[in-house]
Amino acid sequence: MKEDLNSFLPLSSATLHILLSLAGDDLHGYGIMQEVSRQSQGQYKLGPGTLYDNLQKLIEGRFIQELGHRAQDDDPRRRYYRLTSRGRGVLAGEVARLERVVREGKLRLQPAKPRRA
Image (cartoon, rainbow, N blue to C red; front, side, top):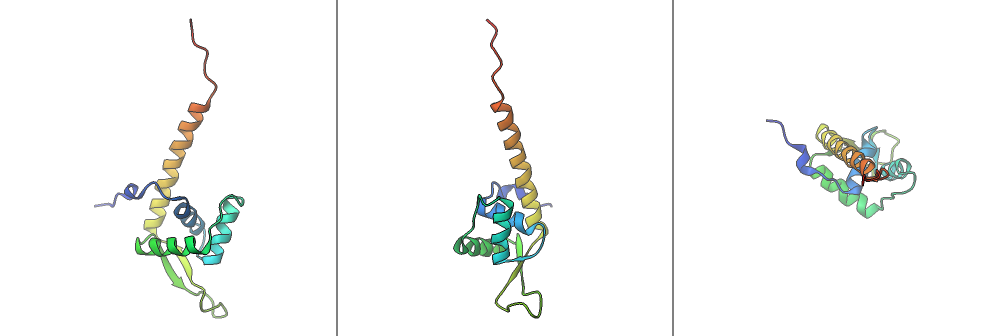
């Protein structure tokens, strides 16, 4: 039986941004913070405490996995993270949910039609 990933929605802003940052490539913690800032055009910034608390929860939930370091010349303390298929599914569900919210918002914000007397 297929798992209902919608039960994890809605995602917190931090979780959404972390999963979105890992959708393109494996990144280390500082790389995730930079990618979140880039994708949000500087509007959303993750501090180290928020980032690493959320990374731990995402690992425990099997939404991401920790890879360790990638290259031999890389700092051995640097850990890389990868989005899992489960994490990709949750991210896709959240994107679809947000699309519905935006669609509804656009409909509601259209100028009111004049009422007939």
